[in-house]
Amino acid sequence: MKNFQKIIVPVSLGILGVILFNSCSVGIPEGARAVKNFNAQKYLGKWYEVARFDYKFERNMDNVTATYTQNSDGSIRVENRGYNVVKKEWKEAIGEARFVKDKTEARLKVSFFKPIWSGYNVIDIDENYQYALVAGNSVKYLWILSRTTEIPESIRQRFLEKAKKIGYNTNELIWVRHNQ
Image (cartoon, rainbow, N blue to C red; front, side):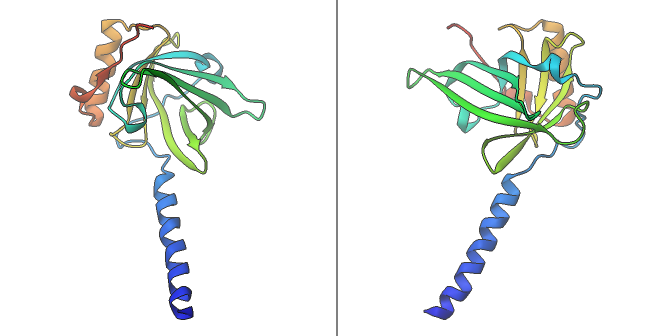
């Protein structure tokens, strides 16, 4: 029994380490480039989720918003909120974002369950910081955000074309309703 424990404990810890390492991916999809000359102060505030893929943690959610505020340590507080139409209740998740490199490059890592971090990459934004295209760490994660509940058709097409060029299947996007 002691020999079994001598083997199983290190093997279990090794497997756990690999799982944690793989779940902490803060990369960017191949072909995507984060916005340079990014102004984090202009990005702060409330954003409406206009479109996304169907993720487990946002399934059945409408009226989704993300609010970003500056923390005293330089990190960014992330408050995601949405209405679950099946359970008929509001859900909220509070997380933290940190820049991967320089604050002028829109590559961040975000965590809602430390120590697990995921990539959050602003890959397109209009000059007035009203509309943003955000990529996760792979082509499984994509968000279209707006300061209002709607987005102009020209921006929508620009973001969709960019996402397609990177390899996203934009036909699978869920267009979020904002009615509450």
